Length: 403
Ligand SMILES: Cc1cc2nc3c(=O)[nH]c(=O)nc-3n(C[C@H](O)[C@H](O)[C@H](O)COP(=O)(O)OP(=O)(O)OC[C@H]3O[C@@H](n4cnc5c(N)ncnc54)[C@H](O)[C@@H]3O)c2cc1C
Image 1 (tube, protein in one colour):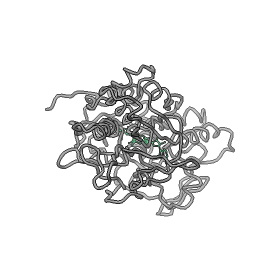
Image 2: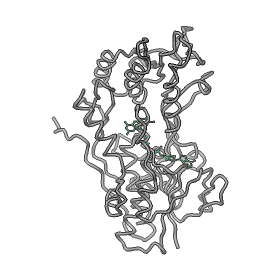
Image 3: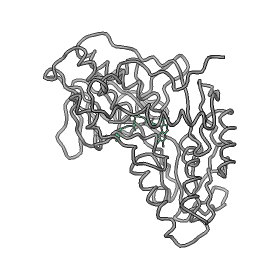
């Protein structure tokens, strides 16, 4: 019997495993001939993009609900190494796992620079566990002794995650503080908060922040963090008992352990079939991989790209094993939808990020993305689950006619 192994049960990995099962079912390959196994650190598919939200009650889907109905084997385990020569995966505390074809989809991790005190005192929303730790800390603030920074949150990093986190926190902290004053400050080295979103979205972010009472501190850098706040490189101190680090993502560290080139984010280059060049039988998808989308743009670490990459990888490992033609990745659009808390959201289209919707109109799109579009079916219906992983890309969330 041959075995396809998928490492990682996030946006790329889950849909890759479903995609492989879909193609095997389409070809009527018996599960005794080719099996699919998904390895994940825990028993959940994490809807990681929602970790900035206040309500975390529905941001994890049991992998069993998606994989058991379609006959994909689940292994809960911590991957510690990959040996492409032996076709083996090392797992913490368990026997190694062999594979015939491997899909690497271990995602990315928050970049954590060695700023003194950040590791001990900083919070983040990179994982469900980290978001829950932040939620526990925020809920416990009223029980702390009154102090100048008790209800002040300093969000370091004014990229997409930092902006979404700050916008959500404005209302959240106000509710926790009750009658006491609260502050949310977003600090970034760059000259404008949300700069990576382009000038149009920056204006919208600024408008939303003004309405939400969120303070922007562009052009500064943080020198150290402690239990009561942070000291800036200028020597200025900000009293803030909640410091949240949102400093960007880097490919999973196991990417570095494989031979071959990496891009600036530590990602493994793959071709448009999701195949890793130079390593036999290895495919990669999602944040751990980079694929050229057109002559000038590569994939972005996003679920928008991780999901189609995963579908294609899952489909193509089966094609590779049975000897049929693979399918190339085609994503004909790029959009960004940034949550701006109770103010709304901003929706941009194109690599130049033209603002197409804002406020409540964009918030409706964001809600649909976060609560429907990126979820796997939870019906436990095999046909419905398999259908989501056909090797095609979803249409954009909002179709805007080209001007
Ligand atoms: C707060 C936040 C907001 C975001 N907002 C957006 C957004 O609005 N739009 C957007 O497109 N993207 C957004 N992103 C980025 C998006 O979440 C990632 O790009 C996406 O999750 C990548 O999918 P992936 O499958 O490659 O990785 P992941 O979804 O991270 O999945 C990786 C999986 O591998 C597992 N894993 C990792 N290491 C091991 C190991 N050693 N052993 C076993 N299992 C392991 C993990 O548990 C996880 O299940 C956001 C991210 C964050 C943190």
